[in-house]
Image 1 (cartoon, helix red, strand yellow):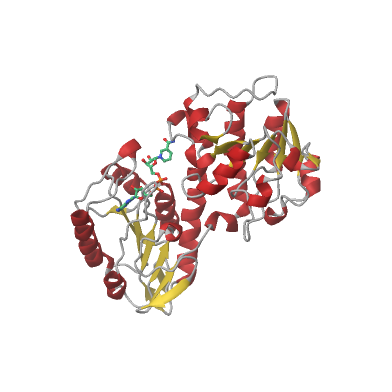
Image 2 (cartoon, rainbow, N blue to C red):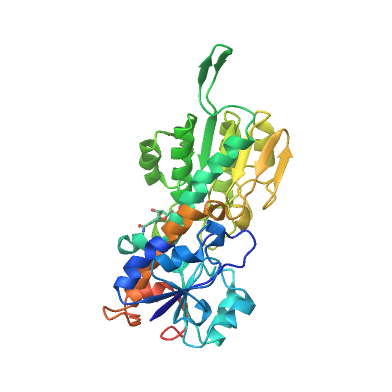
Length: 359
Ligand code: NAD
């Protein structure tokens, strides 16, 4: 089987689906790897780096298995031959039209977002690996926008108090944000509607903000709040937020619009010079005043809604993603290095969004 690593075309997408370091495991399994020239450019990986690791440079779109980061464009779908296996972020819930095109093109597509989040599939969990990058970078961005220091400093010119950072939504991105803010010396507090994460929040040195609202839904994810719960949550958060210099929001509910946790009134109540980094911008935003992809200043508070933060740290983001993909590939290929799609496996069946054995 040939595995193709193609060049990403999405503007600003600097990640690559497979880094040279990850090639060894695939080659050892008898796979061949073809890389499109320039595929690693964004991550500052050269064609010769790939060749040195055992890949060849060529038409990666013609490979049996094509690895991608971002969903393919309509034009890219036409480059895939019937029978090709495609693996990548495919946004299956929001990108329905493209999935249909893939089906019509006879492609068997695996969306990394659809990999069941069970213990056995943890090493394949690309949502988690990329969320860690996003959580980390969100804090760096907030620190850069903030008009104050993060750490407490005692200097000859005076003492400054540490920044107070609140993270709303303590999933993978939120926990990484808390850990990163703490490493920078901030006083950190985490909040979520899943009570079981209180322990995880404390384990990264943060305080747990308990607002008395629990909302655990299917598969351990948060559920959408009722209108009453939402109003109560917003009221309590508006009060709590006045105490923080930085608010980082990461709250998502699968398949739904992101919940509004920070109202316009809450922004008004924050100290002037404060910063909100909203990681949910693509899903509508957790802050009422968020403008997706923009930095805006409202009531003296900078509200930043970065899109695709993992793309800005391409080396490690790609390295972790490569590991996720090689683990998934390990499930799709047998010991002889041939494709063997076993749809009785819940991970294989769960991740497959279209193609042979699926419809
Ligand atoms: P996510 O990105 O879907 O959401 C981020 C966080 O926002 C979650 O913690 C969620 O509880 C929170 N949230 C949603 N609505 C909220 C609201 N109204 N107010 C406050 N917070 C709200 O979540 P994620 O980071 O992708 O993952 C979280 C879930 O996935 C957890 O159940 C986690 O244990 C599970 N998970 C499992 C595995 C595994 O076992 N393989 C790996 C990663 C994550």
